[in-house]
Amino acid sequence: MGASARTDSFLEMMAAERGASLNTLQAYGRDLERFSDFLRSKGDAPDSCQPDLIRDYLEDLLLEGLSARTQARHLSCLKQYFLFLMGEGLRADNPVAGIDAPRTTKALPKILSVADVDALLVKARAGQGKEALRLLALVELLYATGMRVSELVSLKISQTQRDPRILTVRGKGNKERLVPLSAAAREALEEYLLLRPAFLSPKEAQPGNDPGWLFPSRGASGYLTRHRVGQLLKDLAVASSVDPAKISPHVLRHAFATHLLDNGADLRSVQKMLGHSDISTTQIYTHVLQERLQRLVQDHHPLSSKLNKPS
View 1 (spheres, rainbow, N blue to C red):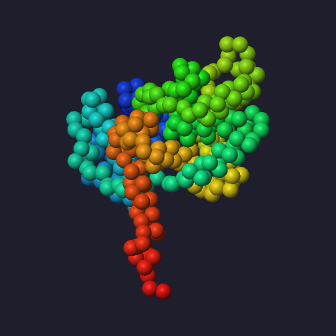
View 2 (cartoon, helix red, strand yellow):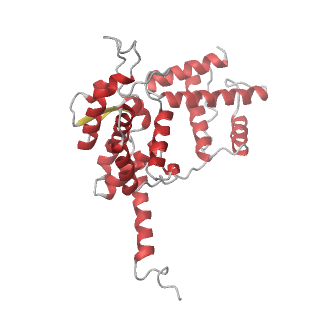
View 3 (cartoon, rainbow, N blue to C red):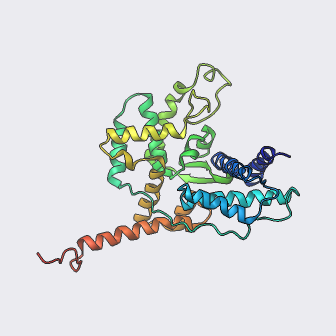
């Protein structure tokens, strides 16, 4: 079995047994192609390379300026890949087992204020026509549910039909979760659905041909792309006098979580709505709130050194 065939088999296993997302599969495919190129340049191969050579590879990634997070992802990919080779009887050991990942520091999410979100929603609600109704539905759903943009664009109409108050979201690992919808999000969704057929191609508009995507597109994927949603949000930010550099679909996800916690929601509930398997991932938002409180004390407390500097 050649290197390319091994990679294909590994990615098929990750998809079938681990439920890896398309993004993860594409990233792992690129990582393994890069690793294979490195081994070929050294006259070696995955079924024979040793730990020292893998350390050399990670050092090359460091010298190329890749972040610690990206290096850690490469190492995680290799660990799983070599476990796969062992399972297939192509290696007797895992040469990555004793190699530690570089330490990473979690960057705090970008902050989007309630006022910023209000400005986006006010501008979106003022729009006219089918494009404006679709944009409003996109923004309302992102902010009301905290969905990942990949989860949003891959929604099917059927996922909205169990209960109008709840949205069924299919997340990482193909796991489903239920997320409550706000009244504003429900209203925006209902209005958009009336005009949704206008986004279908003539062929898809024929009886029995509708692919069922909530946000269909005439592009190759059949549904609105993540990139296009990002573009629409940037354009909305400019029109709303909000810094477009602050806006992305993922920032709206951060805003959803931060604003909920800021208003007294408990961490476990937010974890479930975000679809985090580990609560430690959700706890990053508590750090955001702590930093905000620290700045508040520093800027406004009467004993703050900032306010008591000699004039």
